[in-house]
Image (cartoon, rainbow, N blue to C red; front, side, top):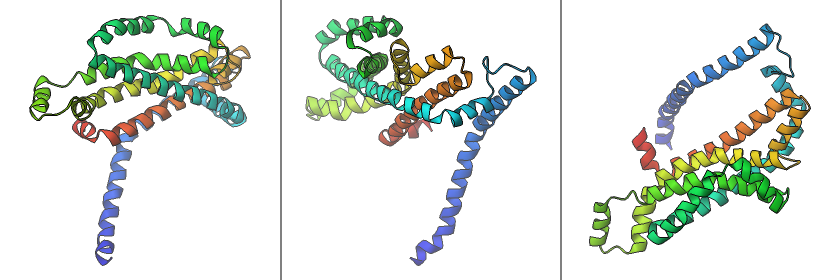
Length: 271
């Protein structure tokens, strides 16, 4: 206990230096954000821009205060659609990638179909899904899943195939089974590629859910954007857009934290 008590000031000093370093790293970004927001408000005041055309940051903040419950109640449907689409789309992509790597025939047969599906604009697919499945949650989740699917499939296939022939030969010399090669070599090599795709998917799944809500929905941030636009409620429109952006940032941050925890060797190489 005495030793711990003796070392505590040094540990506290180290933690303080660490916090100061992190704050110094974030400072340019914080100053840039503050500068942009201040410039935005100055332009609105200087040129007397009408609120319905382009509200200032203070108007948007007032909308967060006055329409907080509206934003909150529409946030959750978009959140669930985005998260379910993210999980479903990436899970299917990962399973297909594993199948393609183990079956050249399956890759030749179905990879072109996946490419073709990816070429169809989401904005064209959404009305078809609404007609088939109605205006409930399902078509929104499918759209969010479709927009996540292809980047993860491509990156996962590439990651699983990124193992060098020398590594595979070494594993065979060591009498490793196919399952051991898969779990200990291929999966390990695919993780950086997978997380690169998941970072993209964490933001695009929100876009997919909102686009689907534009087509046919009475709830969610996408529906609120349409309603605010038609009623010329620009502060609410901007507040909704910022809420959607915050949702995408939240999902991206969660994926980044998971990446840092699961593939420490990769992040340490980067730094």
